[in-house]
Image 1 (tube, helix red, strand yellow):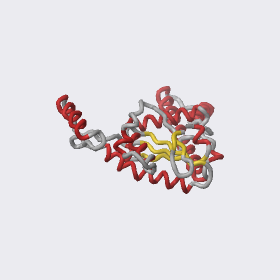
Image 2 (image 1 turned 30 degrees about the vertical axis):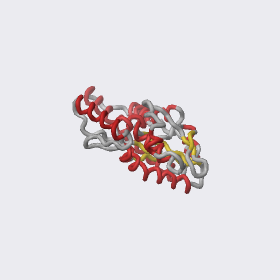
Image 3 (image 1 turned 90 degrees about the horizontal axis):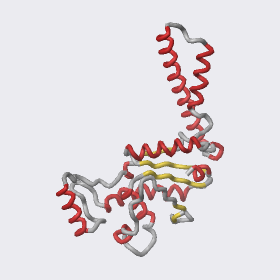
Length: 231
Protein backbone atom coordinates (compact mmCIF):
# COMPACT_ATOMS: atom_id res chain seq x y z
CA UNK A 1 0.00 0.00 0.00
CA UNK A 2 2.83 2.38 0.85
CA UNK A 3 4.41 1.84 -2.56
CA UNK A 4 1.11 2.70 -4.26
CA UNK A 5 0.65 5.84 -2.19
CA UNK A 6 4.21 7.05 -2.80
CA UNK A 7 3.45 7.54 -6.48
CA UNK A 8 1.06 10.47 -6.36
CA UNK A 9 -2.50 11.43 -5.48
CA UNK A 10 -4.16 9.03 -3.06
CA UNK A 11 -7.68 8.78 -1.68
CA UNK A 12 -9.01 6.49 1.04
CA UNK A 13 -12.63 5.32 1.34
CA UNK A 14 -13.62 3.50 4.53
CA UNK A 15 -16.86 1.88 5.67
CA UNK A 16 -17.97 3.73 8.84
CA UNK A 17 -18.21 0.51 10.88
CA UNK A 18 -15.97 0.29 13.95
CA UNK A 19 -13.98 -2.70 12.68
CA UNK A 20 -13.18 -1.07 9.33
CA UNK A 21 -12.15 2.15 11.07
CA UNK A 22 -9.85 0.07 13.27
CA UNK A 23 -8.41 -1.62 10.17
CA UNK A 24 -7.59 1.77 8.64
CA UNK A 25 -6.06 2.90 11.93
CA UNK A 26 -3.81 -0.18 11.89
CA UNK A 27 -2.82 0.41 8.27
CA UNK A 28 -1.85 3.98 9.11
CA UNK A 29 0.24 2.76 12.03
CA UNK A 30 2.15 0.36 9.79
CA UNK A 31 2.68 3.10 7.20
CA UNK A 32 4.05 5.36 9.93
CA UNK A 33 6.45 2.69 11.16
CA UNK A 34 7.69 1.99 7.63
CA UNK A 35 8.59 5.61 6.96
CA UNK A 36 5.30 7.27 6.14
CA UNK A 37 4.45 9.07 2.92
CA UNK A 38 6.86 11.10 0.80
CA UNK A 39 5.34 14.59 0.98
CA UNK A 40 7.37 15.80 -2.00
CA UNK A 41 5.28 13.58 -4.30
CA UNK A 42 1.91 14.74 -2.98
CA UNK A 43 -0.31 17.63 -4.17
CA UNK A 44 0.16 21.03 -2.41
CA UNK A 45 -3.19 20.76 -0.64
CA UNK A 46 -2.07 17.42 0.82
CA UNK A 47 1.15 18.93 2.19
CA UNK A 48 -0.71 21.92 3.64
CA UNK A 49 -3.22 19.66 5.35
CA UNK A 50 -0.43 17.38 6.55
CA UNK A 51 1.60 20.15 8.13
CA UNK A 52 -1.48 21.56 9.85
CA UNK A 53 -2.39 18.21 11.38
CA UNK A 54 1.21 17.54 12.42
CA UNK A 55 1.22 20.86 14.27
CA UNK A 56 -2.10 20.03 15.95
CA UNK A 57 -0.86 16.58 16.98
CA UNK A 58 2.31 18.12 18.43
CA UNK A 59 0.30 20.71 20.37
CA UNK A 60 -1.93 17.95 21.77
CA UNK A 61 1.10 15.88 22.82
CA UNK A 62 2.71 18.85 24.56
CA UNK A 63 -0.57 19.71 26.32
CA UNK A 64 -0.80 16.12 27.57
CA UNK A 65 2.80 16.32 28.81
CA UNK A 66 1.99 19.55 30.65
CA UNK A 67 -0.94 17.88 32.38
CA UNK A 68 1.32 15.10 33.60
CA UNK A 69 3.87 17.64 34.84
CA UNK A 70 1.15 19.50 36.73
CA UNK A 71 -0.03 16.27 38.35
CA UNK A 72 3.54 15.44 39.35
CA UNK A 73 4.12 18.91 40.81
CA UNK A 74 0.91 18.67 42.83
CA UNK A 75 1.78 15.20 44.10
CA UNK A 76 5.36 16.10 45.06
CA UNK A 77 4.49 19.58 46.31
CA UNK A 78 7.14 21.39 44.28
CA UNK A 79 7.41 23.22 40.98
CA UNK A 80 8.69 21.49 37.84
CA UNK A 81 12.08 22.72 36.70
CA UNK A 82 12.48 24.30 33.28
CA UNK A 83 14.96 21.57 32.33
CA UNK A 84 12.42 18.88 33.16
CA UNK A 85 9.73 20.75 31.22
CA UNK A 86 11.92 21.00 28.12
CA UNK A 87 12.73 17.28 28.32
CA UNK A 88 9.02 16.43 28.57
CA UNK A 89 8.28 18.61 25.53
CA UNK A 90 11.03 16.93 23.49
CA UNK A 91 9.64 13.50 24.33
CA UNK A 92 6.13 14.65 23.42
CA UNK A 93 7.32 15.82 20.01
CA UNK A 94 8.92 12.43 19.40
CA UNK A 95 5.59 10.70 19.96
CA UNK A 96 4.11 12.54 16.98
CA UNK A 97 6.82 11.00 14.74
CA UNK A 98 7.15 14.22 12.83
CA UNK A 99 8.36 13.69 9.27
CA UNK A 100 6.75 10.26 8.98
CA UNK A 101 3.65 11.61 7.32
CA UNK A 102 0.60 9.51 6.74
CA UNK A 103 -2.17 10.81 9.00
CA UNK A 104 -3.20 13.36 6.39
CA UNK A 105 -4.14 10.94 3.67
CA UNK A 106 -7.54 12.14 2.54
CA UNK A 107 -10.04 9.79 4.17
CA UNK A 108 -13.74 9.61 3.40
CA UNK A 109 -16.08 7.51 5.53
CA UNK A 110 -18.65 6.27 3.03
CA UNK A 111 -22.05 4.90 4.10
CA UNK A 112 -22.40 3.13 0.74
CA UNK A 113 -19.54 0.83 1.76
CA UNK A 114 -21.28 -0.71 4.77
CA UNK A 115 -21.98 -4.44 4.76
CA UNK A 116 -25.23 -5.89 3.43
CA UNK A 117 -28.07 -5.33 5.88
CA UNK A 118 -29.18 -8.81 6.97
CA UNK A 119 -32.29 -7.42 8.66
CA UNK A 120 -34.04 -9.21 11.48
CA UNK A 121 -32.60 -12.71 11.83
CA UNK A 122 -33.55 -13.49 15.41
CA UNK A 123 -33.55 -17.17 16.32
CA UNK A 124 -32.47 -20.38 14.63
CA UNK A 125 -35.85 -20.94 12.93
CA UNK A 126 -35.78 -17.50 11.30
CA UNK A 127 -32.27 -18.06 9.99
CA UNK A 128 -33.17 -21.53 8.68
CA UNK A 129 -36.27 -20.20 6.92
CA UNK A 130 -34.28 -17.35 5.39
CA UNK A 131 -31.65 -19.73 4.02
CA UNK A 132 -34.35 -21.94 2.52
CA UNK A 133 -36.09 -18.99 0.86
CA UNK A 134 -32.76 -17.70 -0.43
CA UNK A 135 -32.23 -20.96 -2.29
CA UNK A 136 -35.64 -20.47 -3.94
CA UNK A 137 -35.24 -16.83 -4.95
CA UNK A 138 -31.48 -16.93 -5.58
CA UNK A 139 -28.76 -15.23 -3.56
CA UNK A 140 -28.64 -12.14 -5.74
CA UNK A 141 -32.32 -11.14 -5.46
CA UNK A 142 -33.26 -12.56 -2.06
CA UNK A 143 -34.12 -9.88 0.50
CA UNK A 144 -33.60 -10.70 4.18
CA UNK A 145 -36.53 -9.79 6.47
CA UNK A 146 -36.35 -5.98 6.86
CA UNK A 147 -32.96 -6.12 5.16
CA UNK A 148 -31.24 -5.79 1.79
CA UNK A 149 -30.78 -7.82 -1.36
CA UNK A 150 -27.35 -8.20 -2.92
CA UNK A 151 -28.84 -6.22 -5.81
CA UNK A 152 -29.42 -3.33 -3.37
CA UNK A 153 -25.76 -3.37 -2.30
CA UNK A 154 -24.67 -3.31 -5.95
CA UNK A 155 -26.94 -0.32 -6.55
CA UNK A 156 -25.70 1.72 -3.59
CA UNK A 157 -22.04 1.16 -4.49
CA UNK A 158 -22.65 2.10 -8.13
CA UNK A 159 -22.41 5.88 -7.62
CA UNK A 160 -19.13 5.57 -5.71
CA UNK A 161 -17.64 3.46 -8.49
CA UNK A 162 -18.75 6.04 -11.07
CA UNK A 163 -17.07 8.72 -8.98
CA UNK A 164 -13.82 6.75 -8.91
CA UNK A 165 -13.92 6.18 -12.66
CA UNK A 166 -14.44 9.90 -13.26
CA UNK A 167 -11.66 10.88 -10.87
CA UNK A 168 -9.21 8.44 -12.45
CA UNK A 169 -10.07 9.64 -15.95
CA UNK A 170 -9.59 13.29 -14.97
CA UNK A 171 -6.36 12.76 -13.05
CA UNK A 172 -3.50 14.40 -14.96
CA UNK A 173 -0.59 14.61 -12.52
CA UNK A 174 0.89 11.29 -11.42
CA UNK A 175 -0.97 8.16 -10.45
CA UNK A 176 -4.43 8.13 -8.96
CA UNK A 177 -4.44 5.59 -6.16
CA UNK A 178 -7.49 4.57 -4.17
CA UNK A 179 -7.72 2.42 -1.05
CA UNK A 180 -11.15 1.01 -0.12
CA UNK A 181 -11.68 -0.70 3.24
CA UNK A 182 -14.99 -2.51 3.28
CA UNK A 183 -16.78 -5.86 3.80
CA UNK A 184 -17.31 -9.18 2.01
CA UNK A 185 -20.59 -8.78 0.13
CA UNK A 186 -19.82 -5.09 -0.51
CA UNK A 187 -16.51 -6.12 -2.05
CA UNK A 188 -18.33 -8.47 -4.41
CA UNK A 189 -20.78 -5.67 -5.29
CA UNK A 190 -17.83 -3.43 -6.13
CA UNK A 191 -16.40 -6.17 -8.35
CA UNK A 192 -19.69 -6.33 -10.26
CA UNK A 193 -19.61 -2.57 -10.79
CA UNK A 194 -16.02 -2.73 -12.04
CA UNK A 195 -17.01 -5.40 -14.55
CA UNK A 196 -20.19 -3.61 -15.64
CA UNK A 197 -18.73 -2.35 -18.93
CA UNK A 198 -17.68 -5.85 -20.02
CA UNK A 199 -20.38 -7.54 -22.12
CA UNK A 200 -21.42 -11.10 -21.46
CA UNK A 201 -22.76 -12.53 -18.24
CA UNK A 202 -25.33 -10.83 -16.04
CA UNK A 203 -24.63 -9.67 -12.48
CA UNK A 204 -26.56 -12.68 -11.23
CA UNK A 205 -24.11 -15.00 -12.98
CA UNK A 206 -21.01 -12.97 -12.12
CA UNK A 207 -21.86 -12.73 -8.43
CA UNK A 208 -21.12 -16.43 -8.00
CA UNK A 209 -17.66 -15.99 -9.55
CA UNK A 210 -16.39 -14.38 -6.38
CA UNK A 211 -16.33 -15.50 -2.77
CA UNK A 212 -16.29 -13.19 0.20
CA UNK A 213 -12.62 -12.46 0.90
CA UNK A 214 -11.15 -13.42 4.25
CA UNK A 215 -10.48 -10.87 6.97
CA UNK A 216 -7.76 -8.37 6.02
CA UNK A 217 -7.50 -9.72 2.46
CA UNK A 218 -5.84 -7.24 0.08
CA UNK A 219 -7.08 -7.13 -3.53
CA UNK A 220 -5.37 -4.78 -6.00
CA UNK A 221 -6.72 -3.41 -9.26
CA UNK A 222 -5.10 -1.45 -12.07
CA UNK A 223 -6.86 1.02 -14.34
CA UNK A 224 -5.37 0.69 -17.85
CA UNK A 225 -7.06 3.35 -19.96
CA UNK A 226 -10.79 2.91 -19.40
CA UNK A 227 -11.14 -0.35 -17.48
CA UNK A 228 -10.10 -1.81 -14.13
CA UNK A 229 -8.17 -5.07 -14.05
CA UNK A 230 -6.74 -7.28 -11.34
CA UNK A 231 -3.21 -6.09 -10.53
